[in-house]
Amino acid sequence: MATRTLYIIYNADASVLGKLNYGYRKLTAPKDKPACAACDITHGGLHLDETAEWKKVKEEMAREAEHVTLKQLHRDEMGGEVCMSFCSPLLSG
Image (cartoon, rainbow, N blue to C red; front, side):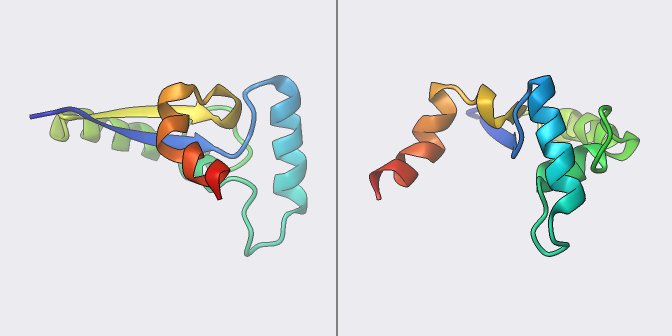
């Protein structure tokens, strides 16, 4: 069976400035428009470390979904393989 990749894309940049920018957006964003939903799920919002719950989910996925690879990327880390899947439709329209 072919391996599939599940991408978690953070709506933040990986740099220190990116983290500060995210923190500002998180504190000032309206409740109905989260600054980064992936950050909320994996890090519980304004934390640098992943939550214990997310770590457990990743462990379960590794055991039970052996044909799925999980990749967590910040938006400035997205390379060609991700952009080929996600960016092209956005750029063509």
